[in-house]
Image (cartoon, rainbow, N blue to C red; front, side, top):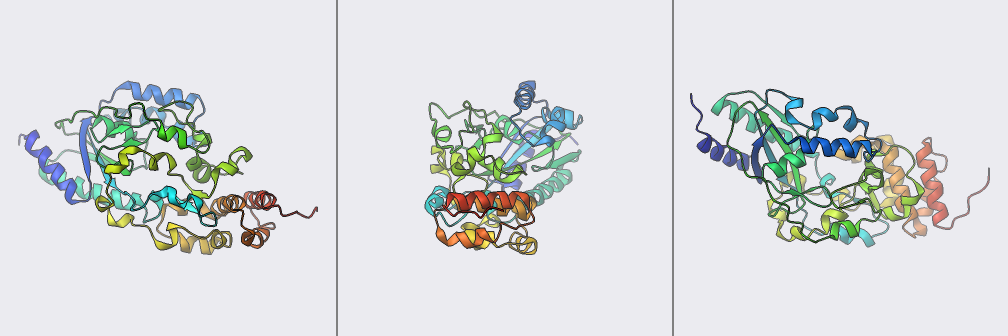
Length: 353
């Protein structure tokens, strides 16, 4: 049968909305080679740090049809996780850890992929064709694709910004062999604003629209496996997993509504503002229990306790001295290092030998 592109596109977007996506757009799989060139330059500058997986498949990441040459169209989708409160309000709660909003609920990979698969099944039933679904688990440049499909634009902090949903969108995509009607790309609306650049505690933006991941708190607390470089430890403050500072200050968030957020991403009470003392006391079993079903589980106990120790060193709280001392004999090198630094910051003398 002949596919009526216009009616199918409308039905597709309605079905996506039923499945919890607040934003959907369609673009060509023949994406401009310019994005791939920008990625290559970024990688050559070492800006990806230890994220070797970005470099290993950069050719596929730079162009959708290099990942799958049969793709004709890409459906880009966004699911809201807009918070009810400003994440920056926890900055002064020094004995509490700050977890990035996206990781306070259930693992978004599971929720978004389930909805993508349901939409994919509907598409096959309605129009046939072949397709593949992706959500942050393959070499796909979701943000450039989302901008090309009209979901929003990549802001000066390099993340997606939506005029309707601010900075709080999980992105997923469906590659299909169907030749669908395309949406117009979204124009950049950052203007002269530099709020996201100015708020970054570690100066991770050498220029607008360019991020040096090696200086980014999200990278340092999640992807970086070794000791956190001393030059960034005080600037990390009480961030223990990720950082929302550059997202939270974006003026476009005034249009974002927590009512539009998928209820699955509502913060779990124990992850909204966890006590540093509790995190410092975690062993492997305790870590797995607390972070079961959370994207945080992938960093493992040692990195989480390392992060909590750095935050404890920035807390100024003598109540955290004893929990930190208990870590001086920890089996993990990075944990011991962070605990020693934290105690020094809290003016606690360490015994030699």
